[in-house]
Length: 197
Ligand code: SF4
Ligand code: SF4
Image (cartoon, rainbow, N blue to C red; front, top):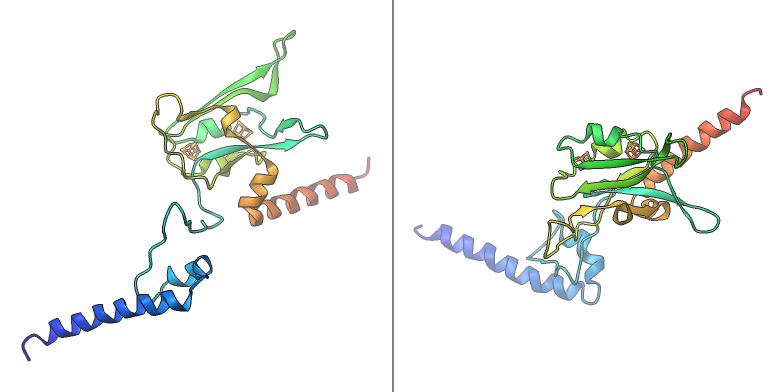
């Protein structure tokens, strides 16, 4: 019959239309709980997340701009994990990392911590290689993707202050990775302690 395809199409559209309202009523007052279902293959009808008022959680392995991890000392001091070894800068494909290594003021000898650490976030391609190769778990990929700015010549070159975040933050965004790394660290320390002096 001529026009049957058009009618079928209209029925599908009508079903989506009705499903949208049925699902809205079903999840009334539980919008954020419904994201997992309504943004999945099980979704019925049309559903739009009202960003930025609402946000979808990002998966643990989501990568955006790298950040530097620091430990907190007993008096709240920031203890850099970074030793300024420069491996991350070497492996970075677009070469957007610059590091200035600290030196002893009297002897001029290098000190294993960075005085300065810059990443040009406009050039960073979020590949995560810096984090993969860092031997000290000192640089990790962040989840924070909301970096819009009105000026980019200066603000998008992140310095050490801007890049540094506490280890507790890292543990909060990547709990499984953090747990795995801490277990390996504890194992190595136990093996070291068990060695005869
Ligand atoms: S972040 Fe890691 S790889 Fe990069 S300089 Fe620091 S310790 Fe080395
Ligand atoms: S994520 Fe990739 S591009 Fe960005 S700083 Fe690290 S290595 Fe360079």
